[in-house]
Amino acid sequence: MLDNRLKKCAELVSGKGIACDVGTDHAYLAAELVLSGKCRSVIASDVKEGPLASARSTVEKNGIADKVQLILSDGLENVPMDGVTDIIIAGMGGETIADIIGNPDISFDGIHLILQPMTKAEILRKELYRHGFCITSEHIVEDGDKMYVIMCAENSGEWRKLTETDSLYGFFDDNDPLTAKYRQKESARLAKISESLEAAGKSDEAQHYAALSYRLANGTDMVRTEAVYNYLDELYPFRAQEKWDNSGLLVESMDMECSRILLTLDITNDAVDDAEEMGADLIISHHPVIFDPLRRVSRNSPVFRLVSADIAAICAHTNLDIADGGTNGVILRKLSEKFHLTSRPEPFEELGDGRAFGWIIELNEAVSPESIGEAAKEIFGCEYVRMSRVRRDIKRIAFCSGSGGSMLDIALSKNCDAYITGDVKHDVWIDANNYGLVLLDCGHFHTENIVLTELRRVLEKKFPQIDIEISDYSVDPVMYV
Image 1: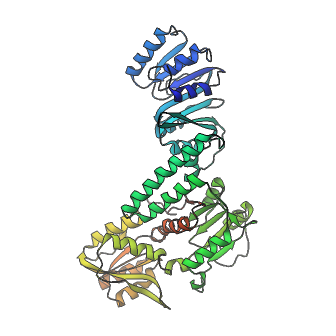
Image 2: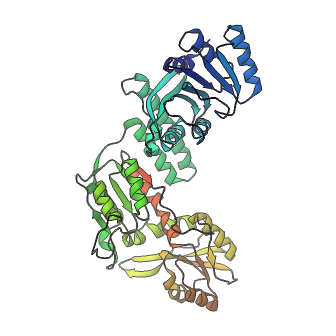
Image 3: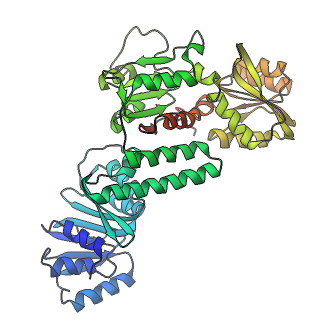
């Protein structure tokens, strides 16, 4: 009556009490649990009347209508939980199962979950841990040319963040020969995604999927933090930072090795929490966690938190802004993808020795201020773009990431039509309007946060064995109401 995946689901039921089969369809699993003697009572639920009619036919045919309670229910909403010890949800998408398990009105204390997602198993794993569940075991069932994942989980009450690699890798028995086969299959799938993204010109995402493919096939491994620092120094030399800056290895850890890295624009307490929850050994940020001399380190200081948690911190600030392929280099590439340029970019604020903050580009065809504004919103992912009240055609555009509002005079002296930056003050807006320059303030955060994806790309290319995540808490510190 049962295929291999449902046989395994039945095998994993504890038999200690009432089992609930959510999305029962024909009630074959419910019938097997009763007829085998594993369960004396089973609840079989479905969201539609049609499957319940099929289920009714099955239980009546097997003479077990008194032992199988059929319930019309969306997930577990109408299911009586008294006496339920096992919940089986099989044959649905991982996201759908996650929505059912994430229902805050249902208590899962003491309940054994058997979950068999048909798709998006990685999303289900991540959501289980986000809701305080723990995967106690995970199994692979082969049926013909198909491989099915079955998870057993319980409510642990402890919140933990799974990285993207964790959620793809799973919690299988490494001694099971199907484990290696499954992970190689997943690795090949991710490699194909990487190839498709590369063909579409999306190199950032392509490299990320290539690294995920590598980790699915080979796992993660430790790397000396010194090696990561030295590689960053090759790409974005720390010696090139401004004299007033404080980039470099600012917080050391005890062993100075890392297998997990968290990327963030700022090392806030939320970012440190994020690092701890994912088990990161190293945080790499753009803004220095120590900038001015510290006279006191309080318990609420991120520096105190880093030292207490034994997490190292590398900060790459102005050296990253001015380096080829750094913060302004990312903006240059993204603007070049949006508009056709007539020539090579020119330096904006020149620092000497070929170094500069920002660039000036010349467009092949003039565009409107609205076109530049919409392009900036898309590039930086910002909710709003503040613009001067100037109407003119735009061909020559200057840009500088971060806090570049004070450099309006450079944009004017170099005959720019528009200037893109962040942190623009009131008097600068007045000057921009007076001089007829289209000024765009896209925010300090948004004009710099985009470099994190590039940092992940270069690090994953060099160190595919390291699990690298961009922090969920690398967000605009300002709310808009």
